[in-house]
Length: 571
Image (cartoon, rainbow, N blue to C red):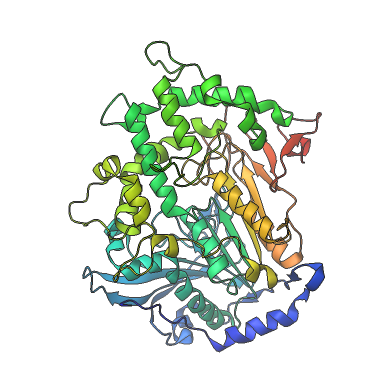
């Protein structure tokens, strides 16, 4: 193998910490997973200026700067982030023998002077390539009101081994593929814990991983590949079958193109007015199934039986005018929601539920732009074997002319240069086997928008059902899955999409307080975290709802303020 998996560095303190954690844990056996002890706070024991010297020499690591960041230099929802030390560096700098480019895993760590004893690895979105500011608020729904850094976590962020400047072209390099998929996380984690040890005189008492979208994929991969490294895993909209999802979105792009009225604009295959018509039809059949007519479809399962695209949306008798769908549109859109298939009839990825959020402002990007501009490069250059030549690659042309059968085979293929397929390096090895995380007292909390147009909540539901089956029919003592009605990809949509999942996962891991629900708020006018333009004018700007652990549904109690979560119960 020309690019062997590099051994992961492990500091001696980490071995001791694992042993101490085992001794601190109690319970287990027939009583369920062990209870992990809570983290304890610690002030930074060295000045930021002296931290680099304290860290010393780390294998395959270069610390480029340690900088003190005063209180208020960063804000979250208008609230100053406390003073902290910013550490920047890189790992495993190398020159590729394949494309001649220089690669490195660039990272930053933000370390509060008043530390809560916890470490959070921030998983970033898209195809990575950017060191997103290490605030640790990437998995908290829409418009976060606080951040992990503000709460006292030491937070790590990275570019996963390549820069945004190269776009998807890093996929030409086999090692860059592997770093993006999972190896960067494996290399960064022990380094980060060593830096924390140098700064505070002890390693982290509790470690967490959090991210949404590709960051959610990173989180699920960490839960299965590196289960001893993390105590709590917070997963938003997990693209844990990302290569298949990207291919399915290419198929969706072809289907929209087949009914587009403009050959250069596939969004004319399903216009804004037509999406609103479908959303209204969904609400007419499904809104009241949870006991409240409130613009939210809580009972996703019941809606599958109640709504039928062919029956419940008018078929155009003449020209399309936004109030109907043509017969051809119904066929194409129906295929997208049932899950595009290969020529043999097998589904490429997953079905998608019909939901009111189909009218959300964030939907068009994922449905009409991403297939041409993002999924094309991801599948064509990063995921398939062999990759397309990078010189002159034309994303839209690739998508619209793609042979789906060929690409489906290529995302699972290998050769002598690319020795791991995308379906290996991008996915959790066995996503329904999380026994290693469970058995040591770890927890995983997953949330997903029902109207997510790129990573399907149906796929996450299928994963959770598999996890339940692998755990005697009930995985709720270590894993819980929350659907967010109306929410699109990670945030937005006509939804209550603002919630604090970080506190929920910490309380579960360290106090044994399993989340019976998460209270989520709409982001109407005046919301400090940012206004969500998709919130309907008929809603209270501060509407709240409980997000319920699957398979429970938030149902109206029959009395009480319809704008308040207190009037709903998870049943």
